[in-house]
Image (cartoon, rainbow, N blue to C red):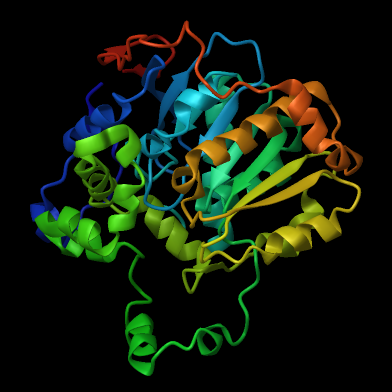
Length: 397
């Protein structure tokens, strides 16, 4: 099936006027493929047909690694404006231990882009349901669920609704957990002119500037966020422009999932329905690992609040020194180590409680987790299969 057949979006004269942006799903696919070519582990990518969740025929772009492993798989949910390729610093290490699945959330990346509800609770439910329908199609009984930023918000919401499916909840600098302080802008010492601009652009989606910049969108990303590009230099070396190209292509498309985020957010930094206000809905049996960046703009006090309210449950809060909001990329080796440790702990102790926190360091040392790739994975050919139709209704690529 051709890539363009999975895009569900209403046309408008505004979108037509912005079609000069030099973006296409073909260019997005090419950028993703080049980034993932740095992997040493074989991977496959394909569309999973989840049916009419939001649009008439929604599809989730999925990549997987080490599916042959018998261990509990880990599922990765990206943040706002991202996609599967931005996990490139983590995939090899995580796949050295267990199956790994990374998806482009519905409305993002290469997945379908339907029209979401503009009501916060409904938009959240639609996104969570799309993850569950994906799980059903994949026939995964349970898994470790890792979400970054907005993906962490959705991962927590998913765990509340489908507790039997989540073996361990790993939240990487999650967005939307804390309540918005009533004097947020005043405390931030924001100049009046910045407040005026912020108020004026409230009706717009968060990444509107990337699209309005047209073919200069990639340049805009490189100039305004050079730090993001530099994070991936260790694996992409001299070709780091691929990251800004990929982010541009992800966000120059119809802002479907971005509109859902806009419906859920309150002043960008907070959610209208913050997670801390409903943590009582999350099963006490689900262990939680929170990984924050010490230099992130995200309020990490929510981690301690969660720990206090779940005194008998396993809640491990780690603040990674020197990392910002993109903690998975800023300090990828430390991040990967924490994730593997959380997974190994859940593998060995079926029902984690707060008492297991005291033995956490010793347990991990005893396990001697190897975060390097096994010899059998090195040099393995990376694959992205050509499109073909199959009888199950999913498109394999």
